Image 1: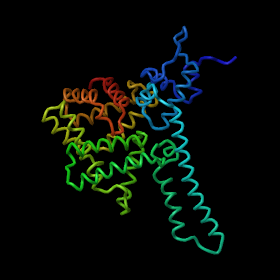
Image 2: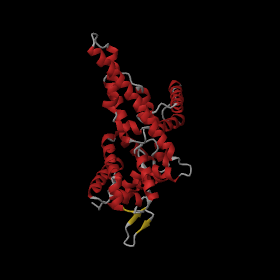
Image 3: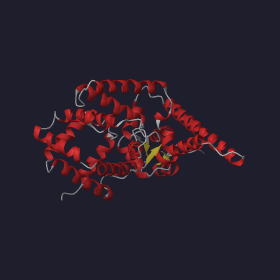
Image 4: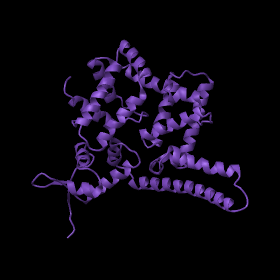
Length: 347
């Protein structure tokens, strides 16, 4: 007789998740079991398992748990569209792999024959191998929406690029309302098309840096990077929002410490805390607590020992969702960090 419900341990074993992860999904309302046994055990039915399948599929696209919850709660959410996107991404990867295979096949035939492969043949093969092996993993390519060649997407980027070129040609300051509004749209679009995957965004940055150091042509000029990516226009918009909550002295402190803060350290720490959350590790866990204390240290360096300033920055994030848009920082991870910090024993 087929079982109609699964206990949490059974579902964890069958799905490859941890019990902690399923507890976390329940705690945040993402996957609530439909029933409980008299003993209190969580019981998952067919609909629960189907929902878990959707959650796991969306996670492979790099969506945060908060974004998945929003997607699944939408009345017009079409999961079939997500599957279609995944198929299209795989088709694109197959085409790229096929191109590389054809180039390698030609090289093999030429080496077996009397003629040596031409320089362009070698360069073509090396170009594709570099793309696959140096910067991206097959898993990343499978789940990134922008890997598809999409006419609407390309038209959108062309439009923003033309708008950016016009601003720069007219000498519009990077901290102007016009420039910061474009920067916000630019970064939000880039975040969406990298599947909101911070690790991939960092890999893209490393790729551009390597191209620059090697003297290679980069699709993004240094002027554009300074205007948009390095924070002049984008950060101006964020600072304008913070200014609604902080004093003039606090804003000067925030601007100064934001410009000199070591991004590599804070990003690595953020990713470690995000990994704890994704693995279902509670904020009170000793490992999470150790990371949270390190986070507190960095915040003190940025804001001094001002709990009032930190509280108003937290309020800004609660009231202004735009502060996180285009930053690859998820609300769920921010909430997890807050809980981990709050659970730290006083020093």
